[in-house]
Image 1 (tube, one colour):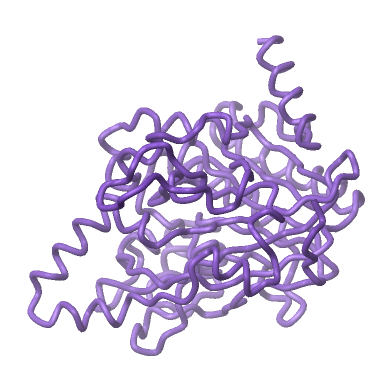
Image 2 (cartoon, rainbow, N blue to C red):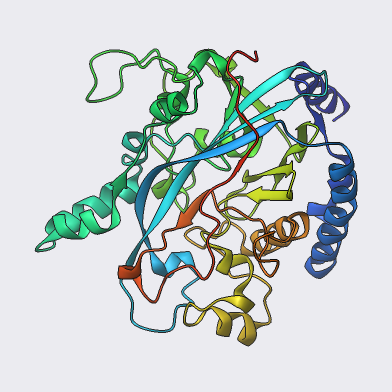
Length: 378
């Protein structure tokens, strides 16, 4: 174990990052009620130190695409009135600039989803087949599917180039195709030449459990991952980590297992306080069901005495996901525009579209922006 820990520490040190000791062992505590209390306490303790260490330099989000998603998954089947079976959720790419623990300027891209890659996940392939069989299915697709920006185009809109990017990461690898981001020596089916890296020599930060899942899928996980997504990808393009890590002052990747085994959440400290982003929920209603106006979500909270209502397309461990969402809630600060709501920005956010009524978010942040992103910082 010591050798593995040393190796992990060395890998983190090489990118100017370090592990977070406050969470050591809390996810292994038994029984589960005591584990939740330990997670909450560790988050409270870490937040004090996290805030004191400083802030990121700049952050900005850009909408990538709106994708269809079953409403029964979005709120753990809590919606209590007839509603459209599909809602739209908006995928956002977030660019963060910070200094690492060595003082080196860094640029991280969070959630650079390539829609063409996501479309090849078995869940979306099957959904597309089902929609095609429905009379007027193309109209249904137009209602729930929209494209705004490809990640490369979004980067250009922000005044950055691929060579400005040090790292990219996803909170988890559901419907993601790493070949589209990191490049591949193999030719992807339907294409004519190997894929080139989207962000030059940038490396992907990924929890070791998440990468291992993609390497060896269980049947209960299969539908949500892109088959062959690692084919031809240089293993050196990945930086793996275990547990919780902080990349520099004001930025951390917290291990938030449950939705997937290797799920992690982006946490940043800004002039308005701490923000958290993940897909453990797709709207603030998931984290704060007591304030929700979506029919059934507040009742779910009251009936079961639960502080959260999870995004539940996969339930690899629903108790872990509950604990992880409490971890996120504890870290996030109240919103300056409306202090009732926390500064949690879903990495895929329920679109505020009237045609989805009554399944519309009660409150929407709609993105994040602080400071000015700068090119040429590497």
